[in-house]
Length: 254
Image (cartoon, rainbow, N blue to C red; front, top):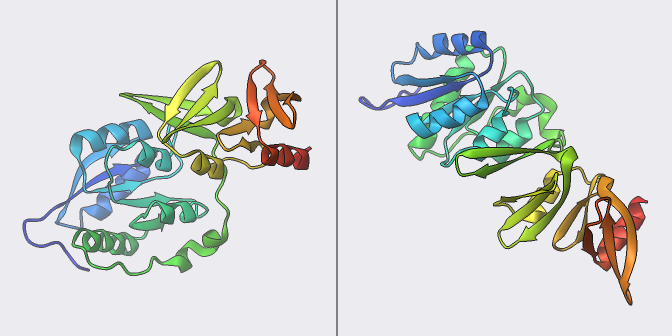
């Protein structure tokens, strides 16, 4: 195993809601003299705060946790931090690759696999080309389709709004942002509408116009607005423009 150069330390934050899992990682990391554990977090909000305050070089991050999952933690971070996912579930592997994870370890973690993952982290920090991740260990995950979002996170200064997808009425494109309408309130998120569309269930959310993505559960009726022009009327009376392509999509789903 390749260690860091003398004097260099790998500052690590452990994020897992299970104390036993954190303790096991502590024991394994103790075998690596160049590793310093700078934070231990039992949930996602603690992890976001720890990254801001401790500035670790690496996260050992669980996926399924209360309050925020591992991917939501990464979304809320204000700086990029290399991450090794440590989880009992293999179905998140594709998403892990999408966020350029250093490695993806399945529980129960073997100390040899953790050592290999740490070596990858050191190599990445040194600019050494990465070896391929061990896809054999992840098994069929590479063929699994990503799950649609169940909630959307919006950072508002130091606050974080959690919008349940079930309560999202529609999303509107506004320059480099999307405006999310939910419960009579609007939330601005720095994201492209097309990206959000790809994360939601296509059977529930339809692009009715180049600037609007609609929750079908909120659609009450379609009305003529002018000659060859229609609007989508929501259950609360809101009217949204409906393009020809959007109208065709709605007809296909009806």
